[in-house]
Structure formats: C-alpha cells, structure tokens
Length: 585
Image 1: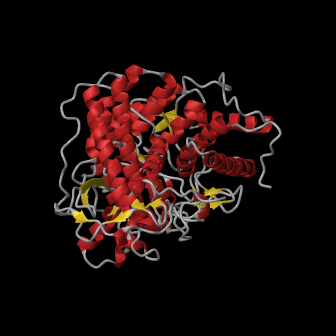
Image 2: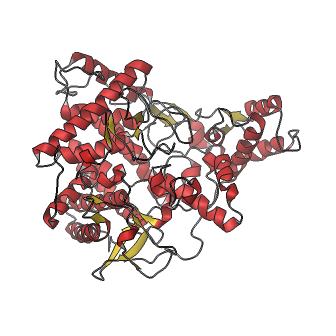
Image 3: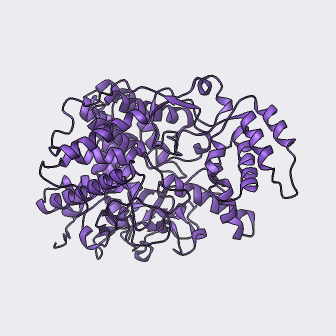
C-alpha cells in the first residue's frame, strides 16, 4: 500500500486534529473566573512528594518480610499493600514486631502465615459484588452490524463480563477507611480483573466505550463520578483507587469520557456537573511540575507538558522490586531521582518501555521526567477542545473562547516541536539535562526521539503500514523486544483503538480500509485467544494470532476491562458479516 505523504500545514493539521479524535470533545458550564491559569515556571529543587499513610508504611514492611520469608518465586508485592486490617493499626504493628525473626529479618512461614491470617483480611476482600443497575443479557439494539452468529455469541459473552467485574467498596471501607488502602469511592466500579481489584484512571476510558456499546449508561456515569471524587479529594485523578496511587495520575482522559457519555445520552446536567472538575484537572496538568517551555527555531515559546510523579521513594506496590533496581546507585539523591522516574513512568501508563530509557539496554536510565511525550500533549489538546465544545453546549461562551485559544497555541507547538518532516511522524522530545529551570529550552532537532513507537501515531496515520508496527494480529507497541510489557511484540487495546478510530474518521477511503483491517486483526486475535483460554487478556502478542502477551513486572492478567471495551467498540463500529470467518487462517 502506498504511504500517505502530507507536506502542507493544512494536511498535517488535519491529521493532527484527527489523532486528537480519541478524546472526543467534552464539557459544561460554570461561570469560573479565568479558567486558564497563567503560564507557570518549571519546578526548582527536589520536587514535591505526597506523604504516605501510617498503614501504607507498615504494609511495605510486611511486604519486605514476605519477600524474605517466601523468596522471589511467585511473589507479588502488590498483594501485601492491598491487605486490610481486622483491627486497629497499633495492635497489628505491635504483634508484627513481636514475631520471632532470624538475623536476616525473615520470619518462619508458619509464624508469618499465622500472623497474616489473624490480623488481616485477604487482598480483594474490601470490594464486594455490585449488581449493575442497567445490565440486561442482550440490550435492545446491541451491535446491529454483527451478523455472524458465532461472533455475536462471543460478543454477548464479553458483554456479560461487565457483571463479573462490577464491584463496590465494602461497608468497612466506608466506615473504617483507616483500615484499608482501598479508597472509599461513592459509586460502583468496573475493575480490570485478576490482581487489579480497584478502578484505574485511563483504563476507564475504554471500559466506558465498551459500556456504551452495551447500553450501560448509568454504569459509565458512575465511573466518571468516582474519578471526579478522586479529583475533588486529592486535587487530581489518581492512577488508581488505592492510597499508594495518590502521588501520581495517569493519561488524562476524563474529558473524553464525559464527552462520549454526553454524545450517547445528551445528558446536559451530567455535563454541567462535570465541567468544573474538568477545568480543575486541566489546571493540574498545566501546573509547574508538568509544564515546561520550549523555544522553537523562530524564537517562539511553547508551553508543553510532561509526566512528573510527586514521589521519590520506592513505589509501595512494587517496593521490593524498586529497591533492588536502585541498588546500583551509590547515593541517596540518585536513588530518589530514579524512584521519581519509576513513578512518573507509571503515571504515563506505559510501565515499562524502552521509550523512556536513554539507554534501551539499561533499565536504570529511565528519564521520563525529561521527555515531552507526543501522546500526553495530544490528550491535553483533546482536553482543551473537549472543554471548549461542552462549555459551548451549556452556554459558557467565555470558557469556550479561552480553551479554543489554548488549543490553537498547542496545535502550533505540535508543528514546531514534535513534527518530523522526514519521518512523517510526531516524535517525543527529549529535554536537555537540567530541565527543572525557569528559562525556556531551545528546540534542537537531535532531541527528537527518532525510534518508532505506537505513540508516534496517536496523532496520525502517516506511513503506519510501512513503520514495521503493523503485525499479523495488530499494532505492536514498539520495534524493540526488550522484555518490558510496553514493547514489542505486545499489542495493547488502547493503542489499537486510538489509531483505528483516527483512521476510520478520515476522509480517505484508503485510511478507512486500513482501520477496518487493523480492527479485524485485533478482533480475531481476541476471539481465538478467548476460545483457547476461556478469558480475555490484558495484552496480546501481535506476531501470533490468538496468543496473549507477556513481559514486565507481573504475570499476564486476564479479565480484562479495556480489552473487553475495545472489542465491543470495534464490533459496534465495524460489525462482522454473516459469512465471514473469524479464525487465524
């Protein structure tokens, strides 16, 4: 297939906005004064750190003792920070300190298991089943384009998984939050599945897209309500609904969720309630820790954004892993910076990938805070367009004008900073050393990361077919097989959806054909893997149709929220003809 070549600004601009697709427009009204904060300076000094709760600090100690007791085999550090207390913390700590320990700090398996059983509820016991109020086995008008009975039967099974993963926090979480790391969310949630028993931020966008295909509008709204609760409580939408996630967010897709729900339901009141929190989130992502200034070749300053976690210690959910990784650093300041890079990479959602490493063969060269990512800035542009659009729907014209101006400035920044004419892609931009300063950094062509990642195509489709990313079963995350889960040969549902949805909205018939082809490959691999394993999976091996992915810090997970959502969204958009086979041949 011949590559698309776009050289004029108009065409690049069209492609760019079209990648921005994924976060459809969003939000409502409210007479807020100056909703856009003024340009802010870069962060000086060591950077902010969110304090942890006494319970979380103690659970990290329990996690460390568990590793010493059991060893690394099948050890999941997250399990121990997800435990909840049966009684008060001081009593539990006192009993823990009295456990007989060897010189290396380990406890006998018998003593440790006795202690855990006596003083803790099991991980996951703090969420309970919640019957979705809007679930029906086969909704009216469900996937009308799916004519193949085999595919339709499978789609109904995937639809039924929403019931399996519907949860609400237990009464103990609501009445005794000090005994739990799970946060007291007010409404039911859809969890991803397996070890992930809490709601996650950016996962929720694709869960919601699937819920909308399933006509489960109230369940979708409840997810947004919970995310807004976190935003109102902590000042930002958390990575996930656990106390150890308060130090970071995730890719900001809340405005896209609100827009998609409004687009299906026309619920203006929902939009009105959502607008002020969306503006609050926009300010968070444009605060001094996330916003930097780059001066282009024409001496124009551009304000762009990065990931930056408010944390400089081992991540509690992976504390034992992080400490081992940081052991090569000799001084505390180097370790603290590495820990911040780990948490900031987790904030990106791409944890982990060679995309964030200065040396792709050395994991400890993670430098996420010194990268301006293409996709993050697309998400923030989408947020600007969302807020402008939805503010207009509720008559807040001043807000609309402010955010349209902001979006126009960011579009210019994309052309000046991220666009690479030779590659026909938008590329992540690496900051110079000493990025934490008030002075603008001058753009340099050599600072663009010219490696190919799927994120380069979030704003485009140019040469996708010739990039090497498109494989037998979908789009690979990168071209580097590093053993990290956000690298080759893994493919992830969100990336398939962002690129496919962008292509499908193009005026080009060729682009729409490619979108359909990618979607069909993805549907097939999900279907065949489901038939082989009886489960939907978190990620897939795009080299091999019907195989799930691997790599990373934990074993492959099943469930799985965003995979389910994307399959249903693809089937709703593209359908499946009655006589078309759905196998890997």
